Amino acid sequence: MNVSHKTLKLLAALIWYIGPVILFNKGAELANEAYNIESQGWGRLFSWTAGIAIGLVKTRYIFLKSCRKNLARIDALTSPKLGQFYRIQFFFALAAMIALGAFLSRVSQGNHTFLVFVATLDISIGTALLVSSKVFWEQGVFSFRKRLS
Image 1 (cartoon, rainbow, N blue to C red):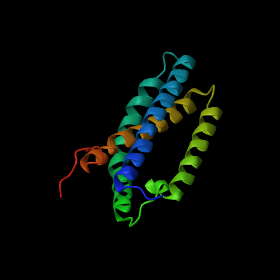
Image 2 (image 1 turned 120 degrees about the horizontal axis):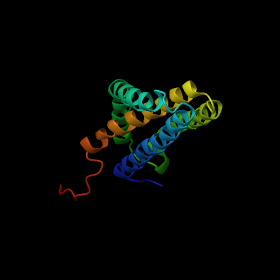
Image 3 (image 1 turned 45 degrees about the vertical axis):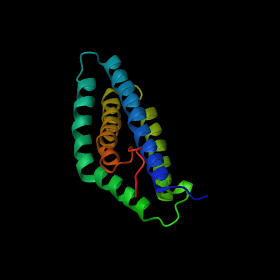
Image 4 (image 1 turned 45 degrees about the horizontal axis):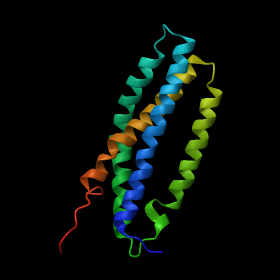
């Protein structure tokens, strides 16, 4: 079934925006667990500060380029199909990242330093996804005005 390029871009944006919601929630939970282990510790503040800083770097060097490249790929499709809002490799990589994240969260339980590390990782990826989502706005993905041509 063919769909519009706009539909594919909206689906891509939806998936892109789900990431920060999940990752910020998970990162906050892990940072709070670290705080519960060492309430006088540095973990929670470090997780958020370092996570945001690292996320901004990831945004600039990885995520903006990736997002733009995917939107350009969608524009180049001659007869877009519903499942083409990301390449199949993206879905395999996403599944692997989810599995790895769940594994890291599980093995970090009870270890303050490892909890802080995993929280920082989650917050950094969430930050990169959220900040790089500006590409969707810049390219008019959320513009719903009828265009006269």
